[in-house]
Image 1 (cartoon, rainbow, N blue to C red):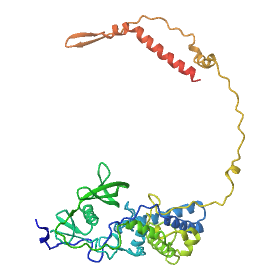
Image 2: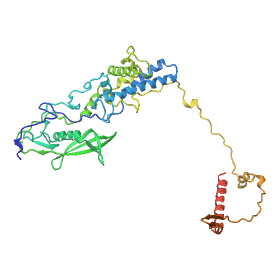
Image 3: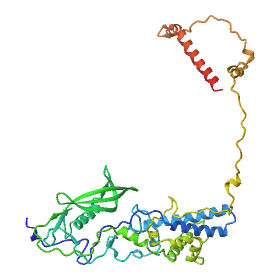
Image 4: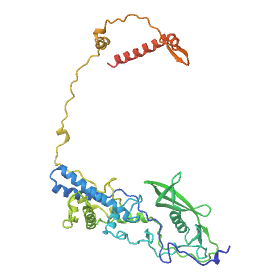
Length: 427
């Protein structure tokens, strides 16, 4: 087979001549966002201003936060599963909430040098063509490395980039597996890409099996094209790094836009308040939440960063809003309310004797104390059963009982002895 004869490429994927992308597009798993706590402070502050008592206050806060939570959760189905809009566990982020409400653009939080490709992935942009990867039905002689998967040739200047492209299509076509025994998983991040034996490239990654993060690996064969005789292009900027971590770290260095947070909260609350079953605090466009109001009830908001937008919006299972406990203003220390008292003097109790324990039992039913039962002549009961003109005598039980009279007597004597002993020791 002469590899250099085929020049027709039917399908070009990933990068073209001037733009190349890195495949890491999943944001790192972050803790819960403080935005929920800030919203909870705003709700609690407004409820405290109009509530007549604590019961009304709690009812208003619970109803309002629940309505906001339900409305926020309903936004999840309206947006795609992109890194900033949903976390690796497919949980809606606050950026996703703002995006679904029209208050945050999809690319508004992107750092310089990061773009969104046609599949919705967040990737690095570069002028380097050495990472170009193309795919087609026939193999050409334009690239030094190639791999074959799903009836297509993947060609490129960089072995690792070719393997990454194949890995991306494996993820889309077959799906990935993680752990042992292997289970289907959703990719979280690629951990490493390294050369392995027999012209293979080993890709190690992490993925979610349900909500558990599990490791996995995939070995992809990348061969050398011996019909390639050109000189490889000089490598440009090294973009083989985690895009998700770069976005997260960059946003963590920028202060949170409180005005943008107020706009998101107003849209979310207004939409919740317009529902027919809304029973929370009254909310209208004439009395919106402002940045100054947020800073007044939650002064620490000025220390938050833009990274809060890409954290999961859920505080707990049912609500993205953290409900603060209303303070009573009391400064009394617990030891002043309930002062410590000296150890009480317990009375000394003497251990009763055996006769004292049994005395109550001796006094039961005094009228039967001297009861004597006269001796009677008793015989073993025998039955006669007529059957087809004959009578059959049933008396086989009599010798059984008589022969074992002593055994039955000993068993019941032992049983009553144990009962008496237990009653005596438990007194």
